[in-house]
Image (tube, rainbow, N blue to C red; front, side):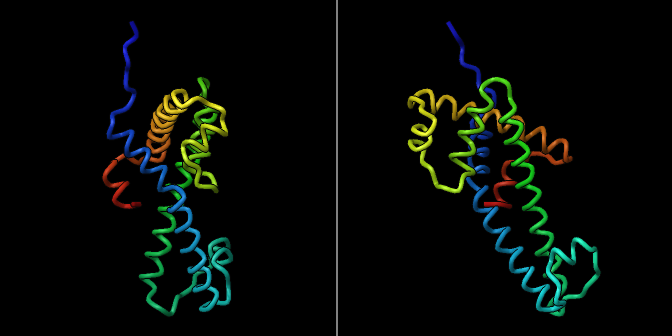
Length: 168
């Protein structure tokens, strides 16, 4: 008789789902904030944000430089989170036991351009309902374990509540 072993706790599983669900929203918000910051820098310096950052040019913003720095910092944090999520998903893809399937589930359900339902993803991957949900859980577990590794490499800790409070 097989015993069922949970790799991660229910709270960690829910936090992972929440984090992945936030991916599209954070990406959208970062893109909008960067667009706004680019407009602001162009209006005040006649240079685009990429020119200023890429060339490491010092400049002064006329309207409240503290706020501008806070906005840049916020974008940096969000971009760092997106980068770590992306790196983790690539590691899931390269995972030897069904990594490609787990990657496809995460990519199609959480990260794709379309808002696919579980049923849509099941159909796209030609999986039965039971196989899909079993694989979906394993995909989340695999992502979580890789995400923890990426966070540790970047000297971060996984504080579930803090992460959800900051990006929810």
